[in-house]
Image (cartoon, rainbow, N blue to C red; front, side, top):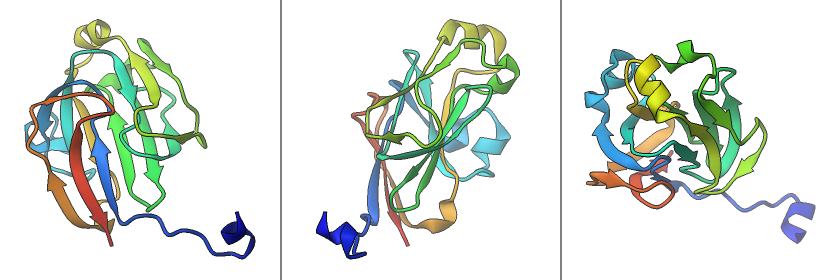
Length: 166
């Protein structure tokens, strides 16, 4: 409390663990069937082939973007790292059908907190893929990037990335 009163704040940790936001199978970014993600045009990251339709926060931070079509959510960690969770591929065309958001821009979230529910069967029917990219949209702030060797991931529990920011 006194630190806030006197202008001294605790510095955010430089290293952050990014947990799986969705339970399912890990997919290397290069194997995501969309060149925008696979060629890292939006940034570093990975994909998940979901086995259930719940997205939780992979980091502690603030919601900075909830797409109007509800298919993607952006979160910013205290240390500045920005994570985008994009449910499925070509899901923007679904116009929010099959998606239910649990958060709004400005909300503070903890690791494992529910962000979004989605209908896997509907995405399989209407979109090109259920594979869901998890992207570091400001990869330029990364000084060290480690991918854990994982195959099956559990939302809010499995650490997929360990990232150090500059």
